Image 1: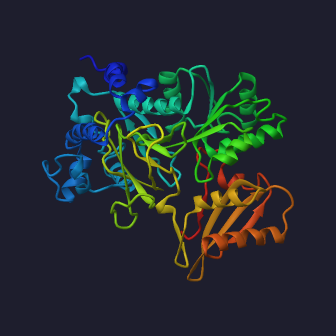
Image 2: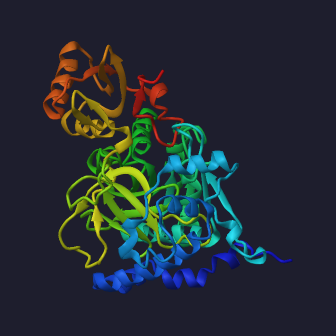
Image 3: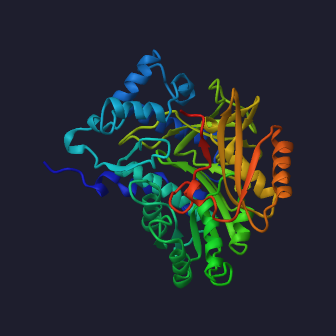
Length: 464
């Protein structure tokens, strides 16, 4: 029996027809009404629902909530379905090893079963989670990211340096496939500082004429410091015209300044879903790719929808994953808020601010909610000697929870500077937080900035 190969299963002509990129993307969606977009969403949602009902994970999840086929007649009924999170997927893996029972591969006839693209999460918080894709859903993820890269200004003539990690994690492979398959630019697939030494990376960028840099903002900014430490001046020896990646709450200005004033763009996604939203050239918020991703913002405690400009957990439904691992109401626990106002590009897509922290990493100190990822943004805005490197440690003193922020600073460290940091955090957050200042590089072992795709920003010492 002949099995489907990757390219036949992907059906690339259909992907190009259904998910346009480049100028065709703007021609298709500019001026489109919300009603017309809703019709596209509804049709694709029903196709994914039909597949998900064949998947044991969803049969169990929805059955437990009393949902039967026919209860959800369209995307207007989506809130009737329970949301789930990574812990539910890991429970599935534990009960049905090695990849859980959410893949849906058995729903396909043997001769039409798609090849499995298999990656994992990094395992930052424990056992790595399997990330599963079919060829079609994988290439749609790729074309959506390419759509955003091209909208931001990436060109086929660019030399793109990527610091997303490889190995089993998804990031580096995702970016490589996107740029090679759909953008057509030359790629320097350097990966993390472990995969290609940081000093070697900046030399490669100089020698091969990198024009675009992509990766997680923490390491992207760190590379600029490493370049200078090695006598390579960003803006002169490495002439980037664009940075695009996961910036985090610190924002674009420190990143742009570190690299000589180039344009900086943000985008957001998670390993399971691929890109969910990204900035365009107008930089008026991140456009949710609503022809492919249905995004709800919900209250972390009640699960109720929040209003515009109110923070909420991002709950994502992928409207294209109908080949392997359907994703319907996946709570990322990443926090953002919706941007109001008309799109300067004339697109019907909603916009969000981007990643603002994790609701499950929120620390409550004396009744005040503190997001560790927001502390870096605050310090970067207010303190010019702050390098951007920090880590928050949470522990208990008796019955009281305490937080200590360790931050790297340039120049002399004295008690007056430490007190200034503590006063800033107290004034802006409304709660007492201890501060320990370190010289540049002093936190590298704690944060893993040189070795991890995502550096550690919270160390919870409350755990036994």
